[in-house]
Length: 150
Image 1: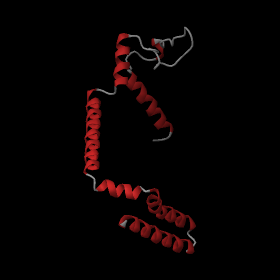
Image 2: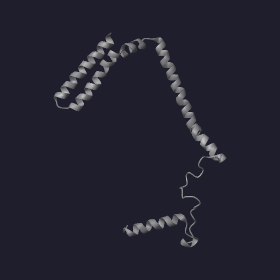
Image 3: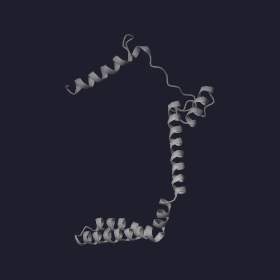
Image 4: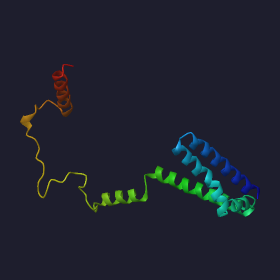
């Protein structure tokens, strides 16, 4: 009975604040305040407040919340252990399938170039034999910097 009275008073105060806000021509804010202030009144009318008041003083309900807490802790622990072991069940299954070689699309990470076409290697004459791949990249960067006067 007291909880319903408090919720009704909170709703009335919130609607008063919404009216003052609307008087100041801040209609969007007034509508938002009115929406928030109607929530406790709706909860009282739906009977949720009475149910919550009965639940708050019930030892069986508190035991149920304890069981829910234990289940949540177990769930989070198993997820943490699963992450430390190397991913989810789906990821482990895909890794086993790839190791056996029976993956659905074994070359899915490579771009599709059409049937029977493979990119050919560049001829060795296009690049000096003593230049490595890393030096080639830096020479390109140096050329771009020189072009811009840096």
